[in-house]
Image (cartoon, rainbow over all chains, first blue to last red; front, top):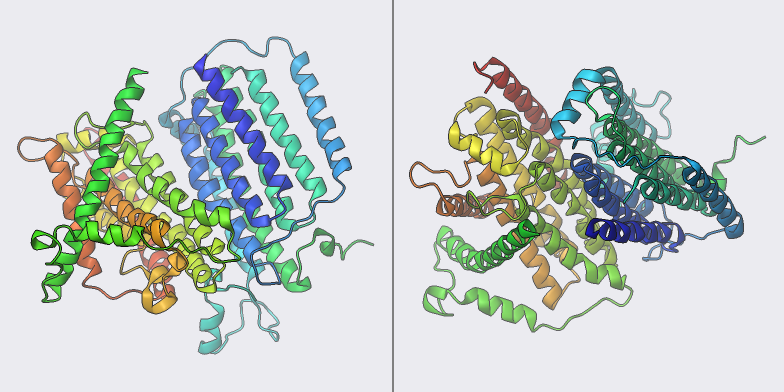
Length: 192
Length: 104
Length: 325
């Protein structure tokens, strides 16, 4: 009983937080509300016997992606000051589409018989996850690590600053002074 | 706390993400909404792994899939933000209709 | 419910103990720093200057609470609270004795790493909401540093996990009680992993030699530039708490926690934590700080490859040892 009430409360908080993400006028606030939504989802995972996944969700999503998104907001605005405007357009269209989608899926859920089987499978431990990743699904695991490597390299190559006269990006030997300044990590730039 | 409750919550979060994608004009705001949708999908996987016994293997399929989905989302956000930075450099603003130069 | 009350009471005691230790830690730091610099340190307030922390806190709390005009008010107010919360959060899974754990999670180590990753958010919020270029620069540097040094931290912490086969912190301590302390015996993964953890912990708490985001000669006061009075006190406390909890985690994972050569118990844990805490101050008052790019260089070019190698070494050790571990 208390589990259901707790779960319902968490679910309501998550939904409210998500609505703030898409309705907030200030982009930084929206990014922080997303961090809160992801944190609450991690709590939901912990309630659903997925504690390892909850920890990984906080570590990766909140500690990583939120940071990335916030930096993304900060580095792509042209004026000084704290207000980062984010307008919303076509609200009735959005509400209709979202409502129709939710209505359709909810109807499908309600119409499915025996969805709640009442069976509680054994708790999945980190041990099970490790076995599953490295024994059953090792190919997918290796492919995902390759994909992450490609994504990292790709993101760095795409977003690198280029000299105006460079023909082949990345293969021009620049003098040491310019090389030092262009090799600075992006985090040290405030605004271009 | 039953499977249908979890699925309804996940579809509500997904619908909120769809609303965000349709009504926001800044690229980063659209990325935030995409994150919401991916998060909702992960919630579906985890709820199935909790409420339905798995037919084979270690029984952790739902969570393993959610783990992979998480990793993929991380990669997608990284590349997406690199593109945002490029659009900003080219146009000075990050409105989503600025990235439409290939439209005929 | 019973477990909840028991855990909550342990938690309350642990939090009180941590905050009291901070109070004494402030005095200890001033005296230690004084002695290292051939001077006496505080001597006036109370015997041997023992009431100096009280004087410090009273001074800070009675200062006027100034908020910049165009600051983002709610974020500005929320940041110090979140910083203190997240700094204290990691202490929930640390076993201070064989039974005194607030929440003995199966994934204790992952909880510690996750809470450490969460510390990024209040740092950024403080830097952004202050509407101050120095604070923003300090915030961005601090976030970049925290996110980068999370990688060697995770790799270093993987070594005791691999050696003991469990992520439960009390399980790791029990393994160390039965075998050897991680920092001592498997010398190749153990000792370098401990050093790596120590360095990463220093960098995560923005301590010298990694304190460029809040160095006075660099950025006024970094993210805490615009904070005064009670909110600044919270940030100040949060930094000490983060260091103390990091020392407690290091003592559990690498130095055997509450284990000791005779009479294992709470006293050993306290001794080891305070030793690490004192070591942090020793380093702070002896070394110069790294420049921002030197810091990033160190992390990505040295500590991360060494960390990967150590994880490999730990896995090889476990594989080669007869009987599994």
